[in-house]
Length: 370
Ligand SMILES: *Cc1c(COP(=O)(O)O)cnc(C)c1O
Picture 1 (cartoon, rainbow, N blue to C red):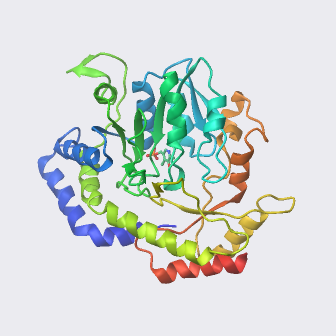
Picture 2 (cartoon, rainbow, N blue to C red):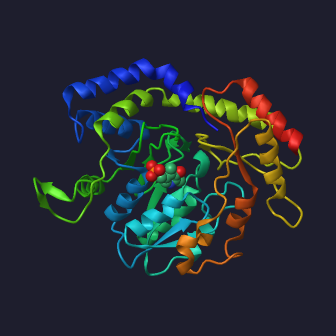
């Protein structure tokens, strides 16, 4: 699916030098590397502030906490996303309420989300799935009026944009992840919150450090969620390459699209109008006609595996049907678009260092299987 070794080979000297500099200073937590990385990320993302934390999951939980979400509150999230989106709501002490997906982009359906609003709704999390923009404009139309925080889960969409503005800069705040396989990946876990609100930024700076306002004086209970100096140094090196890597992903996606154009039975990724996709994943949909709604998709995956080609399913089970959330009463048939997507999606190998020959070989194998 990805080859991180190829990327490391291209930047090894710079990364080793950056890590060496941290080792010389022996400053590992809340130091100059993080400060510089936060400034550089704010500038890259078009947000006033960027606050580094321990993971993307923590970034979501802290974004919720700092937006005033707490116990007894409801947060509307898409059912068709990674587990962390819902887990973060639980971490913030609130209850996730699951919305269906929009049938083309598979992002949260604003109509479904709006229908789930109650007096307890404090926030909506919009995930920009696979790197493609959610329908932020429609979501802002009703969240802004009703005092509901709109939080962008930007973990897969760093570098993507809508109407010329970076994703992550539309909502109350955004959370992103530097999990190693993400478009900008650390050499371990790391995450970040982006926001224009100085108040939210300052609150997260406290929360990530036990709520401390001064040395050993805490204004509110927090926890330990900091992005360490070694990860910050690695990420600063990689940030300088990010736009080139995303451009390569986009070129590869365009090549896949060209190969699949006119092939019956395969649906290519859709993008929201006026948006630029960052292609964290290149995900096609393959529908089945018979009794098993995943049979054709699974057949393609098996065929590719027999050719030594990896594929992945993001995600095989929507969150409202996960055992972990059974107590919330989710039922099969409740969110038909999300449930159908889980049977149809297949992500193909995609990483910047891939060659055109590799893309063509994957595409030919998919077409052969279909
Ligand atoms: C990766 C990811 C996260 C969580 O990030 P971690 O850094 O692994 O905690 C959250 N949401 C989405 C959509 C993701 O893809």
